[in-house]
Image 1 (spheres, rainbow, N blue to C red):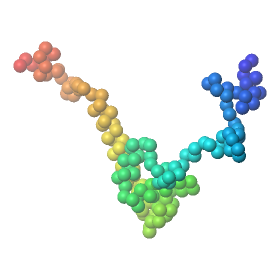
Image 2 (tube, one colour):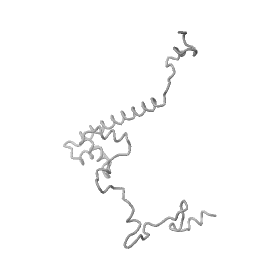
Image 3 (tube, rainbow, N blue to C red):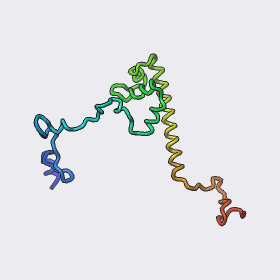
Image 4 (tube, rainbow, N blue to C red):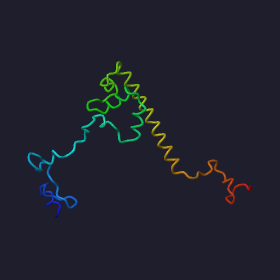
Length: 149
C-alpha cells in the first residue's frame, strides 16, 4: 500500500536517507536559488583542465601522442564529430582523411599496448610462485619430490 501513496506524493515532500529532497528552485537568499549555488562540471580557471582524463590508460595514450595527434583524439569526443576524418578536419589537419586514419591506427596500437601491460601487471602482482610449466615434478626443493641433491 506504500507504493501508490509514494507515487502520489510530490517530489519535494519525499525523503531520501532521512533527508528531505529539495527543489532546485528553492530560494537561498535574495534573488538566489539553490540552482545558482550548484557548481558546474566545467573548471572556470582553465578550460583545458576539463580534458584531463580520469582513466590512467587513457592518460598514457594521450601522453604518447604528438600534440597534433592528441588534438585529433580529443576532438573525436566532441559533440557532432563521429569519424576520425571529421576530428582531423576539426583539429586543422592538411589531409584530414589520411591524418585521421593515422591517428586512429596509432591510438588502437597504443590501447592494445596498455591492455597488454595491464594484463601483465595483473599476472605478475598476484603470482608469488609459479608451478613448473613442463608438467614434471618439482625439482630443486628438498622433500617435494624432485631429484635428490
